[in-house]
Length: 60
Image 1 (tube, rainbow, N blue to C red):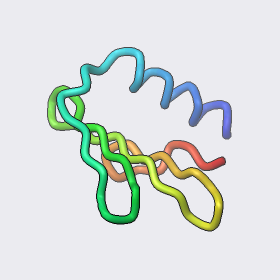
Image 2 (cartoon, one colour):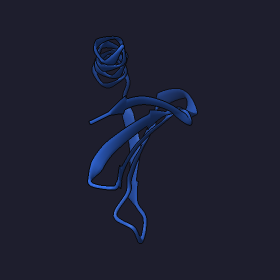
Image 3 (cartoon, rainbow, N blue to C red):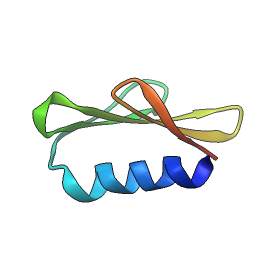
Image 4 (cartoon, helix red, strand yellow):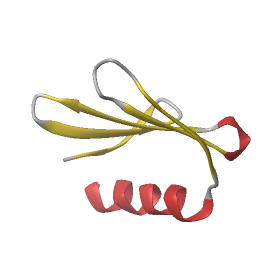
């Protein structure tokens, strides 16, 4: 399951153009990708959580 999520993340990063980056007051990082898609990185309880268009795709 984790490997599938990692492959989906790699696909997102390799084939999308980053059009913008924002960082909120909590230090969460959000990449605005081509086509209005969003790649969001956040920390929760000392874990990294990556979401793509609101769907969790990786948790470390």
